Image (tube, rainbow, N blue to C red):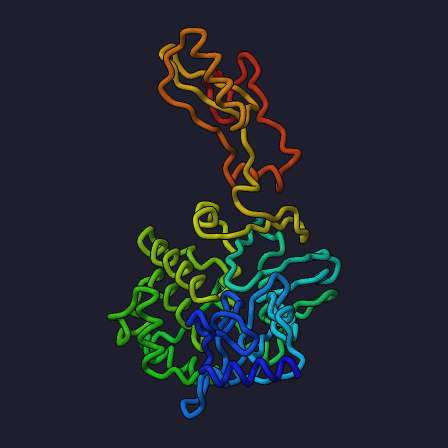
Length: 395
């Protein structure tokens, strides 16, 4: 009864108290004390705003809480109900984010040859993952398994939650094979129109023009494939892989035939795809490209996942180099945290310091350490030895 009496008094005063501040039916200044909420159903114009029920969602660490603003006069609501959540608030957990690609315990055998041996790999939404490994390591088999072109001997592959090779999975991905061939008589626009028909894409001329522009072929829509250079055909292949707006893009050696300008175009394209929420699995031998564009790197050898992480995680610090008036001084194994003490000791010893560098291994060093862990150093030549096919002794 007390709550109902307060609500009636609130209506009589037009939603204001003695201090002139607008208050809700619970006596709280403003319409809500909940911060950072987004109205989902705005009020209708023929109902006074203070009496309109509406709902909003408050972001929390584990999901979203639905907030309901009650009509004036609701019995049973107390000020305690408004501390963080209104009466009637329901917790709705945030929907789980489905990975663009999820590979679990994947194995593939060709007779007695094991191409993959229990590989686990996940590519998240809008994530760019580089797949590295020597020839015959199993990279292309992994990519073809994700595309549904190779049937696994064991394990599972899921694309955006659907089993690889099923219609939903195929609709969610785009694929560019390492070795591909387009009809030479077709123009770039005709080729993309064909793939739109095959994929059921409704994009039409607008999509084709946008894709050609993304890969730097905006003015080449009428050029025949046979009149294009290998690099232009490579970029056209990337454009056809993007037909239909896939959520996952599988690229098998996409920059192998590109010149530096073409590689820069592809790098910019991959960055744009990340901004659009497209995930990319990039199979390549070009470690420099991987270091520049990839969020994570996975190294495969002999069918097994040998290492995985960010490029800077896989590289390791090798020490500190200090340029002084007397020359370069190297401190093996020193870390970034030791730099101030090293500089302080050198200055106390009277050295003039011009530059301090942290020496780190490259991704190439990390790659070679994984795929060739037991590689011995080249043997030193024996005194007086003659090189093969030569007559001059080793110097």
